[in-house]
Amino acid sequence: MSTIDEISTEAFEKEVMESTIPVLVDFHAEWCGPCKAAYPALLDLANEFDGEVRIVQVDIEAEPAIAKAYDVRGVPTFLMVKDGEVKERFSGALTRGKLSALFERYLAAE
Amino acid sequence: MTFDEGRKQALLDDFREDGPLAKACLGAPESGGTESVAAESGLHVALLKLLVALGGHSRDPESLAFYLDLLSRIPAGTNGLDLVRSWYAAIWELPGVGIASGIKSTAAYADASAVIALVSDSRSHPVAPQEWRQARAALSAIGENIAPAEPVLAMAWDLDRVPGASADVFYGWQSATTLQIEQRLGWTIADADRLRPAFEEFSKHALAVAGPPDKDDDGWMSRYSAALETCWADRSDLSGLKQRYDAVNAAVADDRAAVTAAARKALIECAKATKADSI
Image (cartoon, rainbow over all chains, first blue to last red; front, side, top):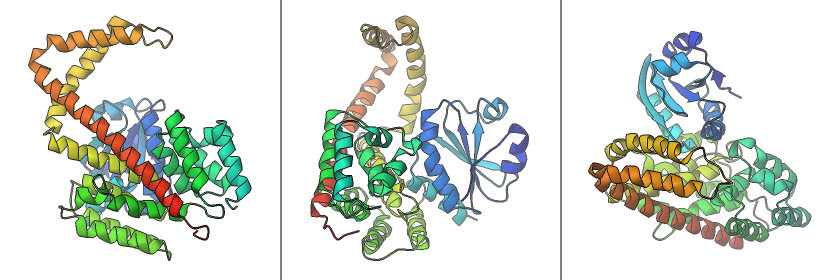
């Protein structure tokens, strides 16, 4: 069973930007209902793509510096990071199918 | 745990009385309530998640009637998993709003059809998680514009491992049809981006005028709406875009209602056709 780690500002560079596999970063907040609604799908995807794509979370209130650095103005906001670069960003509702298609696209490009 | 006649009646009674099982089921999606109700009732979590998604997690009379109609038609002795799979096949083929109609003319049709074939296979024998993954990967190869295929991508999961995918099929279906409407009416991301700052600014202004929302204040909504109207009236440069936005929104709302009605009807029809010996 995979987990979705909370990433601190200090750990962001190493855990996300220097990751050897693609990373989906979920910027969320404790008060955010849509963020909580998205969590079960993220957990399913973390299990399905265990070892291939990593999913992490950043709490924008606990880690405002990272949120500011990546111009996160609302939650949930997702960043897809690969090879130390933000490849795309998106927000809004997610389905498992949509996320899995996104991951497959990045894995196919490797 | 089997969904036997006693548990079926208990579940129906609970939903009629808005009892603890109904409350658990209709709570926030992330609350895990459907898992506990599945353990209590013998129904599969995937069916319960689909049930509440189609009812909009609502307790309104129309949704309640839908829950009761569906639950009453599920034969005792079944767990509802095959019902979910039969619903997938049904909504693929539905005339008009069906999923196939939105994808038929695209490059994804063959790979989407392969997923539907796998869904059909899964009704008679187990499909390995890797087969589902391969089917999704093939369909994903269509590129970034996966919206028309989103509900089909959501069908390609092992529901024992990922039961939440059943609800995603419905949400993906709604997203796909919304996109079709936006494309048909020429609504673009650039249009939405152009209106967004005005929405944010006007909402702030209207909140300042109307004061903090107060559910006990009957006049709050009319004050808020009037303030918003004034803001839009002052921005004649945006009026054409706003009118188009309103038209797109109205069409999307109509379409979502049609999809929801069709989805519910299809599930009820599938339940009617469910045999007591299907798993």
